[in-house]
Length: 351
Image (cartoon, rainbow, N blue to C red; front, top):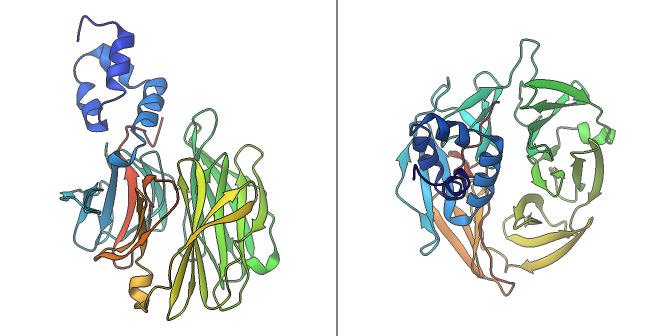
């Protein structure tokens, strides 16, 4: 390949797996420079955002492992052990958000936030001496996004002492700044549970659900360009039990798995059109399952079938009559296991 034009080398290497790119950097100085450019990383990332390149990261008290996804059998493939490249206590970490191969991680023993690429092992600690990027479980939320200038950013919403505070971290500037955050006073109550942010169409979306039967459920939106917050309605699900709304970007459409019920659980799939929710399908009521398994559910959707999964395997299969698409819903937290779904890229957590 040494005699090939640089444009041809660019086209070839933007289509190879991320780990091959990492090894290719050692070929020569010219390749190292090419493979480190922002244009190469952006194009390479966009070409690898396919279901076959997705991996499942699972962390328990003893091991951290990465698994490929076998869509033919709807199962995890053989695991590869991963050594966590940061200080931790018995793997006590939480994966809060993910985007283009980057994971936003909380070290639970220090409450510090960091960005980590598990494919390249590169990481960036986000905490500062003045206690920014200190994350408190059940009070705080984060969202990871990229702006039009390809600057990866973290939105951190903090609920402290009866007030909300919000901060944005810029990878480009390596700097946190405070931004205004206005919302209803009642949302400060610890009875409200926030989801982590899901990035779609220039906006971060969060679900906000009140933790009792008949409680208030809304969606909070953060426009990444204007840095303004607004509230839109939650899908009109029945108030017959606890409600949980979990968001996923599927082929550049925002979907929500809305779960409601108590001993008998119903899961509906909704899609967002402008600021309104349209029901895609309803599954039959799921037979009673334990609360521990309910907290463990993630979802696979592939080629017309919807699989309700836990770490123990498949619970239910639901046939879908919608257009086929192949995707894995990226669950970011599993009871007893902490994990995420990510795409293998060479996107760096720092500049």
